[in-house]
View: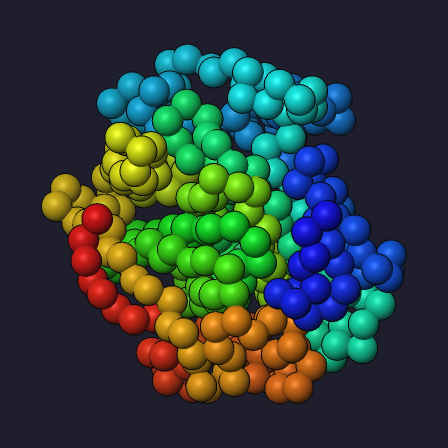
Length: 300
Ligand SMILES: [Fe+2]
């Protein structure tokens, strides 16, 4: 059992053998969810959409991004008869006093578990979503190594796509209006924590129909490499690159620094998290977003 208490900020552990969490206070677990391909509760149509959204880089699509082959997923998860791709808990920490501070601000604390490996050449990842009103979100790596693909999909404006990698104890702020996919770039299980507005309204369909984000993270010669998803050519014309950004070790406007549990922030300075309920149209949080990344601007 791996003790996650120090990183999480409340008492909990994780068993990598069977991918189970253990909460000291059972009330802390919140609501469990699973993204599964073979589960009997998923009727055929939903399953097909999930297959599409988890596609699968070049190996299973043609040059236009159309699916040509369905991979045999069970071979990737021989010990996992339901083919659970990834899972998590929503509304975690209800046994802790910080929970009500978050609830008062319409916020929620979640956990996501993404296994290592990949499907085809593509690294294991979430299917990705955008938020209905474009609310921001904040993520924290609890265990393992993560990559976050963040991008905009505006029809009438110039678009931006960035990639941020983060290790244990690092925090990544998703700015307003950025769709997002979390990728397990390490060799172990990946555990993520996040705080998000209950009113964020995740929307999956636009990303499902495009088989993921504007770039696919694939394994090439033992390294993560990005290839362009041809279904995004209307949003990202040829020549437009993906830029690498580094999560800042400290965000003074939030009172957040590397190594500090996100949960701690929700207790002491919970008002600082109010930015998660705004899209910054009045520019009130410009300074916060300017502090969030070190802009390397290296093209990938
Ligand atoms: Fe989100």
